[in-house]
Picture 1 (cartoon, rainbow, N blue to C red):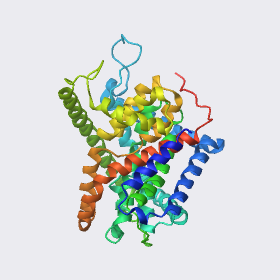
Picture 2: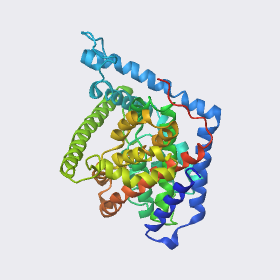
Picture 3: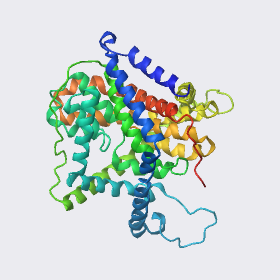
Length: 419
């Protein structure tokens, strides 16, 4: 059955690499999996809920329109303003750095304002309470896991900074796995803009993916490093300390600028390094096309993509995208999905939208180690030992979420995006 094989594969791999196989508690694992399946079914199959999520795309439209006003003022036609010349092609030029990345700045400021106005902390507390009651996790871990839906992998541990020293090794692994398995709210709008041409109601799906990935992060981490100990204390700290709305706007702009610079730098460096490696290994005979990291990743992930429910004709492309996410980052993978998805089935595009959602990649491990070590240097040994393992745990979470969506979406009338 679509997706069911993928779920079993993820659970088996997580168990095989578990530190203490005999201590894995199967009832909480099954409860967490059941909650994931139920949540996915509600969000994808209940019309009133799916329509509510679809309405979120109006937010993307508003941010895109508003951002274009700012970029066209600063960058003129290369930022989306009126062209001073006649086009020789059907479509106007689209420059990623000047027309798409600025949306991150605007959304980062909105996130900062929502934090200052106490909207986000209240929402995080609500999600944390639900996680504590349904999955029996500690308050501190619940707060960090809930925060990872809205903020980055370094910022989510910040909301429980005072408790990072006292939580158990297993709970610490849950926190960093959830951080690596989700995406920051400030860049969700970026992904939506990129894949909006191949997936309908993209923002609703990205938000749903982050929700499911939090649950998946808890499930996989509990299998890989099991521990019954629960740290009950936990509350949302004022991790950013905005003094006023203007301070939130100013610092949100600065933080968004750092994110944009980091995105640009990481894309340039990682894509260039991959191209260099591909150039060196391209001399190896490999059929009708040069050997490349993307092709190798596609071969490895192709059967796993099929296990998630991706139809076999699309499995090679899906495997390639999963490899790009792991080797470079999810942004590069979503960019490729925006192109390859035009030739794939709507079902494949939906599953990939979920399975590509997450920060799990090689570069993120370095960012995680540097950021969390600054927060809690006392846990440096645990961090150095566990952070590299999030490459596996985060990848398993992505496959688990993709498999769940592959299973739950059976029978849905999935239509390609109208062009």
